[in-house]
Length: 170
Image (cartoon, rainbow, N blue to C red):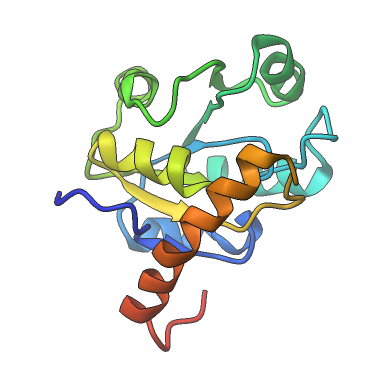
């Protein structure tokens, strides 16, 4: 896989990433960011829509793993009702926890995908691990200085995605 920060797919919400779509592209495992991908930072536990979506993936045999840069307490609280494999302080964009997750759930680079809301952590981590990436917009974007800078840096990459995928709506 040639390295790029441009994600392979972009959807308006995690809920638009259907089990049918994932199966159609050969996915057997989905690695997931939590904050602003599945729920905003302010929601400590998953909502019914997250639980339902995860259940729909599991029903067709797609395995899921949480890969978060957030702390252990946040990840454990979010995962307590889900009970899936979860990594906190993952060190994204480094690929170590993504590779470990694939090993533990029995998937590989060809049949695993990562979904997150940030290009400079999530997409980069996916591509460092040699897997495809799905980008979703942040649910509730933080306005701190670091996040604003990252969002500015992401704009040209999103424009490149739009140019490559002109006419595709997901």
